[in-house]
Length: 220
Ligand SMILES: C[S@@+](CC[C@H](N)C(=O)[O-])C[C@H]1O[C@@H](n2cnc3c(N)ncnc32)[C@H](O)[C@@H]1O
Image 1 (spheres, rainbow, N blue to C red):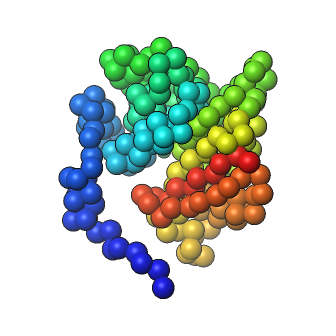
Image 2: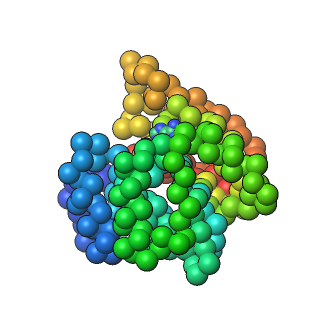
Image 3: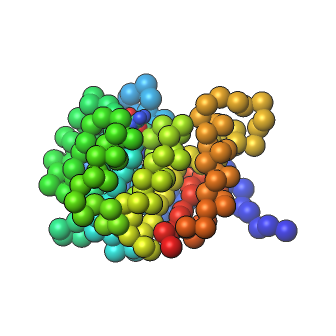
């Protein structure tokens, strides 16, 4: 038998009440983003705080993010990095990234962020060609187009040092991964991605049914 608390709205509010320490600027970014039509793409403040905690707990100095949107996870990462730390951030949208850039400047962490606009697969190929990049990253957060998760994961494995951590968002896709009537490209890609990572001996693995499902993979 598995013990699993029923995480209803009230319990989520309770968790926020006893743990959430959202910086004012992140709150402002979240409120501004909530006015956008695709606001649901943003991670929750609890998840942002969790990412910050992971960056600090792993002592990450060099981070990579695939999928920035307006910058909530990026800012959560950048603020958690130590002095001299940096994060390479990839997104295809100039418009949304502009907001991320603006808030990073206001938060005083713009100098830690290397924001690259373009298709992430192309940006990752270019990054891999840079001298010293392969094997140099400590932490990777993948949260872009689901159809390319496998490609992003492969690139992340090359870029990470041994012991580095990959966090992948949305792996349960609102539960659609279990619903065989859902055969859209995102759901099928996530099913294939999950099955592949399950058998991937290059990583230690854990999947948490938290938020929209998170995969944690540590490079062996
Ligand atoms: C779910 S959102 C990211 C949310 C973000 N992590 C946050 O905390 O708010 C996904 C992002 O992936 C970007 N994206 C989609 N396809 C992409 C591609 N092929 N290359 C790079 N970025 C892409 C979108 O522009 C969007 O900003």
